[in-house]
Each structure stands twice: as structure tokens, then as C-alpha cells.
Image (cartoon, rainbow, N blue to C red; front, side, top):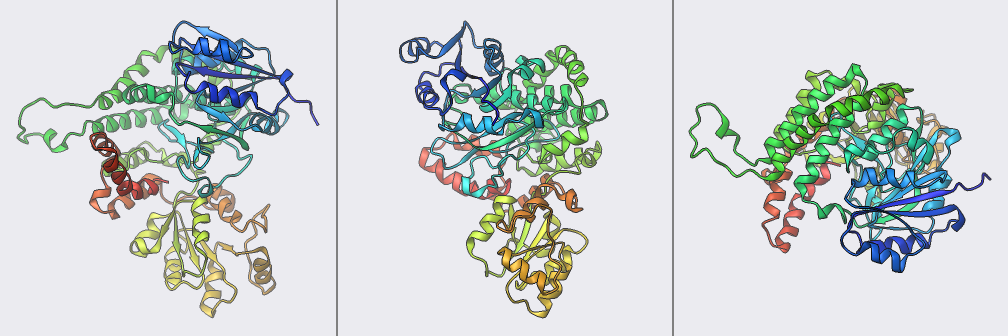
Amino acid sequence: MAPLPSVALVIPSYNGSRFLPECLDSVAALDYPRDLLETIVVDNGSTDGTAELLATRYPWVRVVRRSENLGFAEAVNVGAEASSAECLALANNDMRLDPAWLRELVAAYAPDEGYSCVGGLILSVDGERVDFAEGFVTFHGIAGQIGQGQPVEDISLVDQRELLFACGGSLLVDRALFRELGGFDPAFFAYFEDVDLGWRLWLAGHKVRLAARARSFHHRHGTGLMVPRHQRVVLQERNALLMLLKNVAERDLYRLLAAALCLVSERARLSTLTDPKEFEFGVPVSGTKREVPLKALAHLYGVAGFIAGLEDALAKRERVQALRRRSDDEIFALFRRPFRPIYAEASYLESSAALARAFGILDRFPDRRLTRLLHVGAGRRDPGFVRAVAAVVPVVQAAEGPVEELVRECDAVLVEADAPAAAEAARLAQGVRPLVVDLVDRLPPEGLELARQADLLLCETGETRDAWSAAGLSVHVVPGDDPDDPLRPLRLLVEEPRRLGFQPATTEDLQVLASVRRSPPEVQASPGLARAVARRLPQPLRRRLARVLGRSQRQLG
């Protein structure tokens, strides 16, 4: 076995004295040699007694103090410069680390194989829900976490899955490489600096992957919620634009940037909560003044910040593009869900889809994953089956609408071979959508014909699959198929459809648009409006509103 590397664990903190004890106590309990681990807290000008806490309770922690809040990005850079360790590990101050966290990150760290950066699995503080297991990036630069907030058992956890980026709250990276690539971009201050780093790592020929056993437990937004929402929106909008400008090759830069700017204006318009009819030419209006939420202006201030940082970003772009060892085609394949909508509001979804068509963006993401599957069931399977499938890809049930409409809305069709509507769904999917047939022990003659039409066959067990193969039915065997994991072929179809000869026929924003149009009017409220209403309600009513909107949120995946 290779010797364990020395590690500098850097924890940026700003007024985090209420979280630091839990975090640092868990650091003290890490199963990693003490002589190979240095813990550095970068104190970003805290005024809440952080300095006294660290001096009295944690004298073994190295503290690097700054007189002002440098932001998360620059604080990490400062910590990386302060050490000579081989690896740099990062954790948020509002986290509790599993004792095996660092050892598991190091186990997945394999720079000789290209994996110079590893991300850990981040769970809610109670360990029941996912905070980060895998990320996505949209074509307009907004990034997020796939499966965030979902129960752990309801997501597809694949250890050592390749990621475009590791979450900055839980990662391990070659420290010299981190510095060589410029570290986190200090201009970002906070938000998306980790996405930007991951993007640069891949551009430069390195790779990032997940260590699913490296677990940490997060008080989500424990630090972020100290900052007003509209100020966070400014950073998110600005940084998404900066990230596109720096990292995208010239072939695609202008189309993506143009579409991104248009969508910022759409988000700003929706956040005003105004009536669009008042802005139609000639429509009578009462008065010319309206109250506009700060969040609506924040989107525009994000663009203003992008313009202010343009000259600096263009200079950084030159340096980033000089690193290029991979094409945008390879990078875009890692975006996972480039058309994932940010708002489930019909006009926004229509705008997103129209911009993707108008600027020729759709064809630039042929390797995107499938994002919606139609399930036509007979009720034979136990309830856990559909739940397991839903962990791989969001599922729409045939009972939710006319089958023909649902086939058009979804990327693939999964039918239980003995379901009453199976034949109709298969006919509609033929040559249009991948058809997955879930086999049963005994098929009627029409079911056998259905199985022969399938692009992919699933069996409950490896034994069932072997039995059907022996009976002469050509069961699709995926390279590397695991007979103990009967859903693995479906997982591969969803995550790498081109590997099996398929390509998504629709986009996620259009799927959600179709879903919104099928939903009751009360579920179609924009997220901005829902939040604005919720803030004015007492807690019991807020919980009831969340339950009412729960279906729409799940449809977003």
C-alpha cells in the first residue's frame, strides 16, 4: 500500500463560534495519523468570540486570522498557502465529520490514475437526507446538487462516480496542483468557486470523483443564512456568468453567455412579482410606482458585478484556456442535467427552451442524462421497486395522464410485461423512446412479443435473467453488468444513454413545462411567489403550504 499523504485540513470560518466546537471535536476524532494532519482555521474577521474559543479549547488548531471577511474562496487560498502538506482537505465550519471521512477521501485519491480531487458525501446533520452526492451545471452556468434534500435511500449512490466538481465543503485535492491552477478564484468570494475549480481541473487533464464512504453531516446554510437572500443571489448570478466567461471555449462562449444573460433578466422579471399585463402597450394602469423585492434587483446587480469584473475575468480566461487538455464536448458531458430548470414557471420554462433552440445550444449537449421515465405498472412488483427506479431517474406514473402525452414528455418508457397498458405504451415508444421491459416469471404470448421489441430487459434477479436467456430470449446484457444489481442496466441507460446507442429526445425544461401544464393551477405558482407568501405565514401554515407544493418540487427531480 502507498504511504498516506500529509494533509492540511482547512476550515474557513466567519462568526462560526456556535458551530466550530462540533466541527473541531469531530476533527479530533478522525481516524488519521496525527503526525500527517494539520488543522487550519482561517478566521475571516470574526467578532463573535471565535478567537477566544480557539485559543482556550483548541490550542492544537493552527489559526490564521484576517482582519476582514475575505470570503470562502480566498480564505481557502490563504489556508493552502500556509501549509506545505501534500494534500489540501476542506470542510465547512458547520459540519460534523465521520471518523473515517479523511481516510476514505484519501483512499479514493489516485493522482497516478488522474483522480487528483475527491469529493465526499455530505448529508443532513441527522444523516437522513442528502446535501451533496453529485452536482449538475446548466447551460447558463447555474450549478447545484442532484438529489439535494432527498432521503439517502431514495437516491442512486454510486461510489467513485466521476463528478464535474466536488463540493467545497468536503473535498481533498493535490495541494500543489490546487495552487498551480490558481486555487479558488477570489473574485467569486463565495458560491460556485468549487464548480469553477472542478471545471479547470478537467480542462487541465485531471479528474474528480466521489468517495461515497467519506461522510460528513451538515447544518445546511448554517453560515450562509447569516447573509440576506438577495445578497447571496448577487454572488450566484455574477459567478455563474464569470464561470462561463473563463472556462468555455470560443466556439460556444457567446451563445451560452447570450442565453445566460437573457435568463437572468427572466429571473429578475419573475422575482418582481408584478402583473405582466401592466407592461403591455396601451393597457391602463393605476399609478406608476410598485414595490419591488430586493431579490428582483439582486439578479440585475449580479450582472452589474459581472460587468465590473469583466477585465479581470478576461485576463483569467487567457490563463485558463492555456491549460486546456480536454474539449468542451468532454466537459459538457459532465454537466449531467444542462437543461434543469431553475424555476417551475411556464413562461420561464418556455424562455429557456426557446433560447436553447435559437442559439443552437441543444445539440451541444448530446451526452446529457435521461431525466424522466414513464412507468407503466401492473402492481405485481413490490412498492420498493418503483422507489428503487426513482432513485435512478425521476418517475412519472401512467395514471398521471394520457399515455400518448406522457410518452412524449418522458425520455424512456419502462413497462411491466403483464401491465394492461403495456402494449399501447410500447407501440407509442417504438423507435421514439427507449423501451425497457420488466420481465415476469411467466409471460403470456403477447408479453413475449413485447419483450422481443424491448431495447433493454430487466429481471428481478440474475437467476431470472439467466432463465430467460436459456429459453432463447435475447436479454440485453450491459458491459460490466452485475447480476446482484438488476437495476444497473437501467442506471447505465439513464446516465450514459449514448453508450447504449440512445440520445434524449426532449429536454428537462420542456418535460417540466409539460408537467406544470398537467398540474392543478395551485401547484403552478412560481417558487419566488411561493416563498414570498410563505414568509408572511405563521409556521403551521408554512408547513401546510410546503406540503401542497411538495408534488411540484419532486417533479423537478
